[in-house]
Length: 199
Image (cartoon, rainbow, N blue to C red; front, side, top):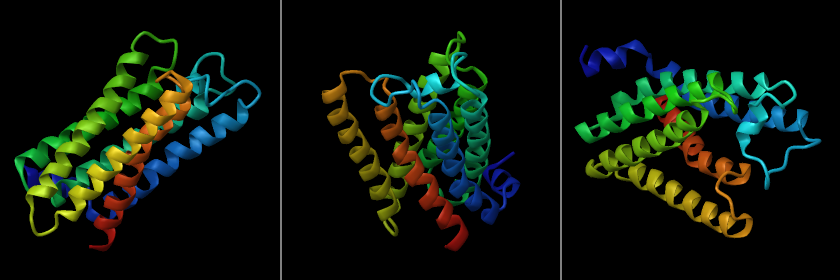
């Protein structure tokens, strides 16, 4: 199956909608899970994954949300192959797709299960790597380098904010830093989803 076949599997408009709703699904499930567990959950003391652990009230709100967001994010990633210019970009989209698979697995293997920590790390690592490679691809396309600048600036901004928060709370496991880490992904899927819909 070549790249054109992969593009054809997910229609452009459908992929755009997936890009827009993926972060909405993820953030909505996180928000509801925080509300349900507000009696004990702390943004400065707990990692987000506590919301899906065995001690959480209705932990499946968090876990099912991540599974759905991973599936929808994967479909979005398949659609953006048509916006890629180089092999670097193909590698980036492939890495981002793998990140979405690991996001799905974070929901399947919640906090307390053996694979949880590994799939969570893989989700962040592969998603960020994919975004960096996609940014490089767009920077190499001198006709529209602004898309690459957008991704890189979002990653740098989130990194700086995360380091600032870390200097205050002294732990990379807290929900605040994890949430900040998802913001560049949210920007990326929303804006590139809109590209698929309206370009």
